[in-house]
Structures are given as C-alpha cells and as structure tokens.
View 1 (cartoon, helix red, strand yellow):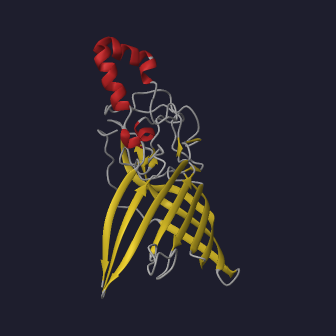
View 2: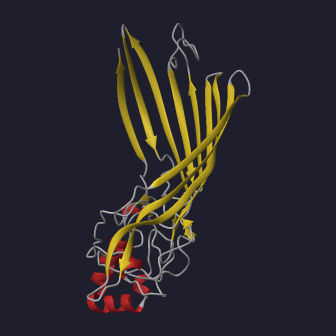
View 3: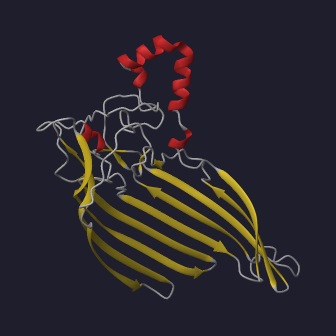
Length: 308
C-alpha cells in the first residue's frame, strides 16, 4: 500500500455534517443528579479514494463519495460528597457506521479494482472507531481539614484521600481476513474473509488508583501523591493507527488475536521457515508479539504538588 499514491482533486466539494443533540438533567436529591444526552450526526460527501481505469494503467484519485452516521446516548449519574465519598458513573452507547472510516480506507480495493468484481462499498458498515459501549466509574474518598481518626491533638489522615477510576470499553471492529503476513513491513493486499468490520476485538478493563496527602505550610499548600496506572496489570488490547489510516483494533485480522496471525502455519509461512530456519522463526515470533498491541502496563508514579 505504501507504494501507491492517489492523485489530488481540485474539484472536491466541502464535506457536509448535520448534528443534533438533546439532553436533560434531573436533580434526584440534594446530593445526586442524573443526566441523559442523546445525539445524532450524519455526514455525506466525505472524501474517499477511488480508481479510474485508463488506456495506459489504472490510477486513483480522491472524490466526494462516502457517507455515514453516528448516533447514541450518554447517561451520567453524580453524587456530591457525602460522608467523605464522591461518586460518578457514566455510560455511553454509540453506533458509528459508514461506507468508509477515512479517506484512504479503501486504497486496497481501489488498486485491485475490477469492474463488477471489486466495487467500493455502497452500504454502511461499522467504522473502525466504532466502540459501542464505554463505562467509567469514579470514586473518591477524602478527609477534610481536622477530619478522620484522631491521635492526640493531631489528625494524621486530615486532607488525605484515595481516588479510584474504573474504565471499561467494548472492542473495536475489524474485517476478518485470510491469513497473511501482517507482521513484516512488506506491502500486502489483505484478502477479506467476511463482511467489512464484522468482527470485534475483546473488551478492555482498567483500574487506576491515586492516593494523596496535602499539607498547609503558611500560605503554601504542599501535597504528595502516589498514582498506580492499570492497578491489576491487565493486558488490554490497544487501538492503534498501525498503517497511518486511523484508529484500528490492534489485533491480527486473520485471527482476532493480538499475539499471533498464524501466518507461519500457512504454505508461505512454512516456506519462510525452510528458507530462514529456526532463527528466522524466532525473530518472526518476536516481531509478531508486538508490545504496542497492548495498552499501558502497570505503572507506579510518585509526585509532589505546590499551590500558592
């Protein structure tokens, strides 16, 4: 794909977007509220690469041809501080569909174009960034000034607290393909093995934990904190811009797995092993198990803060 370039088009028209949003917020009690927001956005005339047969050779250029829509609902519930506890819960349900995820998403189809055989999509499918479900829960437990357990005339936990953030999200879609060498940097044309973006990567879950303690030193407020990112050290599949064409699920499209494409089990893969031997196989597997396919592992950070 890297060796193919589309020609520009000075006659491109502006892309069109129509967006609507309506929401309502309800005060459930003195300390709790609930808000619901619904949204709908439609787009048309989006730029997409297209092929042009000619007497010399087929070439590609950009034109206004894609369309799509994004719609969904967001729900958020909040509880203001009550007995040292603050809570916030949010959930979003979204559907993003269209004929193309970005201006170059159909480059492979355009270059392999055959009239009546390989046509550009004319019906919508889930877009690469279509994450249907997102959940976020935040809980904060903090002590106020001169609050908490007392030790003599001191309050050791005064102005201290802990914050927990839980995030979860459904997997991003991908198009299943026949097994190809997705690991090396060779230019390949993927062979679909199902409808566009008909499969999805796994859900992701992450818990972040942050503790803090503040001190008042005259006019200066001094604080220390410890922050643990991905507390459970979960290996979540990341979403990457692997080919420079936008966010996509970091799984191999032939298996739906972030650790193997099973290309070495194909005829071409076995020929690769015969040619390069065990050393080549081990290097391929090392490259295939790309750490970039996973999001941030557990990290522990310590820091200080000052305010005047």
